[in-house]
Image 1 (cartoon, helix red, strand yellow):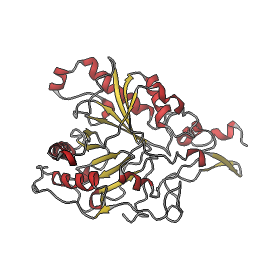
Image 2 (image 1 turned 30 degrees about the horizontal axis):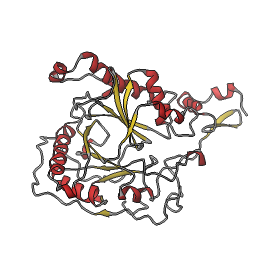
Image 3 (image 1 turned 120 degrees about the vertical axis):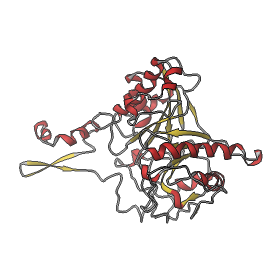
Image 4 (image 1 turned 180 degrees about the horizontal axis):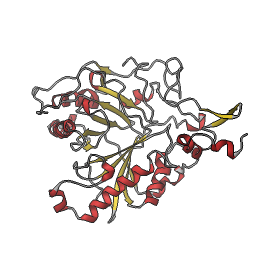
Length: 377
């Protein structure tokens, strides 16, 4: 056991680890200087390809097709001088995250950094009150600050992805409140006050793993929330961040709406479709995230596949085997409007992953699926 003085000599950049208890970080004395002994990384595990974990099947079978069937119209929007990277590998290029938070804004006119929170649209300024805009954007800024590096609520092994979405605020939300959706919990917090204290409670209730000493998951019932049981399709349409996303995203979303609206009633898929802010990978535009409900056949297959990320705290982090209430996420890249019909048919209806478009998969525990083990890499 080392004195506080010894611990203080640990470099400043890793001091924040102490906030999560010394179960995550130990100082080991070698001579007169302390050394760090880090726990096994949640993101790198040498046994992941040989040992089944968390009850996953050792012989996973995730349905897939190699290529995406195309619609009859093969035209693409004019991107000008901006090109799509068609040579680099897509597979595995995904932003690691334990939870994905969507902040409902009702618009796609976000600044390049969504936490800066000022709309540049004169039309929006004319129809939305200044107070409402400040409320919406300050929720984004406050939440981003709470889960950003250096804050006590940041667990580096369980990162949180915060994005804006064009989905509207719930009509039941109180004046000055916002609406937030969280995946893979598939929960919409319909009305949350625009206050730091309320957002802190949201973080500790939903966004931290159970093993984190700051986690208070027992408080989840204190929020006004509803479960999401439909597939949610999100297209990156963040034009103020990257022109390619700003052009392709809205075109892809429009195509999803058109195709789904023409479906025969007996074969119709009821989906929530929206735009989303930056998720990384501009060069792979169009980028699409599909959050599938836990009861979907493809979700069940994904949850039986080995993950490439492991909890660092042992059995207390292992979730219940019942995952029907939580979603899985499929990230696609290089999506063009002519791919939309194929994605709807193959992924949403038939429950198959389109390999040529796949960036990554997140299971219902918030872990990345090991694509190499299931033969996708």
